[in-house]
Image (cartoon, rainbow, N blue to C red; front, side):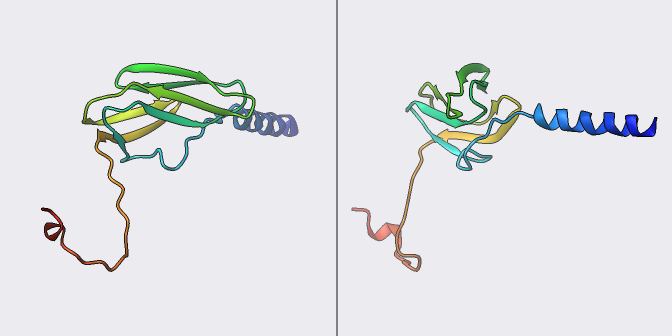
Length: 120
């Protein structure tokens, strides 16, 4: 009797692991991200092939189905600056999202020049 109960518990654990959602987002889509304003916003990731993906942002739902390679993509409409917002993808939530201007800066790490000297 003890073995049947133990077997039942093991099977329940295996089933719960197999039933777990396989939707994943790339690391760049994470808490605290800034999305470019006034441009369409692409949200993408991977899931089990054929899995339905529901993206909720600003109280609107967008849907996609993972292709045969498990890739999916949802394009949100262009939005004005604002936030913070939350993005939900199936059961996952990304918090503290801002919409605004995204700046990419690069250069030599010890470059100590003041920006005021470059403005004319």
